[in-house]
Image (cartoon, rainbow, N blue to C red; front, side, top):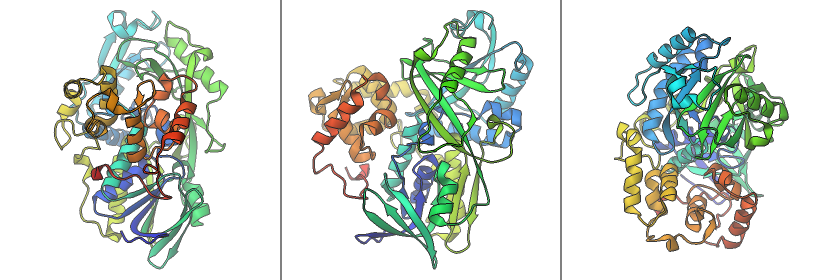
Length: 525
């Protein structure tokens, strides 16, 4: 990539560091394109870290006849499980039969279709349950005696974004966080864009521009590009609550509600239960989305409808909210709006591709289709490749995605513990889930806890902080405690302030990044 002091020439400029932008950057860089990605905040700061943490086909979308979307998502579910078995894992869901809601025959029929729409190698199918003699029945009220169990997947959504960005960077992409795109205009066969970080401006000349700004997609077109879009977004707010663990078994629940919505209760971070989500049309500021009192009450009351233990707002230890930028399809309710994506391709001069809608499960397919669209206009070196490649750290038992990495993950954890016997078991398990085989990079040259540096917070050593800051674009305590990990849930209330203070006082000149300079790629270490 040709580069001057204040400008960069590249093939592709991507605006937006959520899952779609990072996924497109990874795919494009892997096809030999020079790529620049800019994100106005941290990676996965907004919608992409505010999901229900699920890789799933979307069982409830069958009611809206979204068979194509569900099938696409179910196919991707197994592709993603194999590619990132450290941050994605199988999860079994229990749906109690609730009298007055969808009848058992309808649930059975829906699950049969769900099991049949795509080939399954990793996940068992659905079947009925007698909740009176199954572990999942014990936390529920006695009137829920029947149910069904089926399979989907869990994902660490924010790490999924970061690992796509890491892979893109190692393939040559430049990733600029906390850097907004102020303007973009066509000049001949190029886009000329002005990026701005902390006071400094950078000019990027690109053959093509991708608008993956999520909830800001239409706004970016209108303000930075100064052209209207032919598609409109419907912003849907989804909120979640986290409470202390409600059950000891490894299953999740999917609950029906009289209003037609579906809510999940999911084992989370060992000690907690994640409950969500709401679906509400949103008209407020997308930069500051937060749960409101009515949403908290809604989720508490719905959960209390099923669980023996009554859940009240005082039980909530953490909440998060995000705005999903869905394609406006005139659906009557927010829950019914399609979760499929649309790609708007403007070829009037230098290509402009805008991403509308989508869901985290189909991000890889979206990215593949986006780069396929752009390919005729760009000097690509190859075709689609991400379907048969591991994300960083996912190569547990070899370079290629495999069923074994999913089915034998615990064996990998045991091997890691044998390799680093000085590492506490809980830390080994956490590193395995967060970093996979990249745990070796984090622990390279270390032979004991004394080599990990200061224990900045309980279970968080200086070595890990340095790793995240140098190789994963983390700059603040919030980046580390709430996006690169969920350690914040396990820490005291002042942990974030303590870590920020440590970062300010211990960051050396070697660690400081120049304006617009992304972290060095892991490949260079």
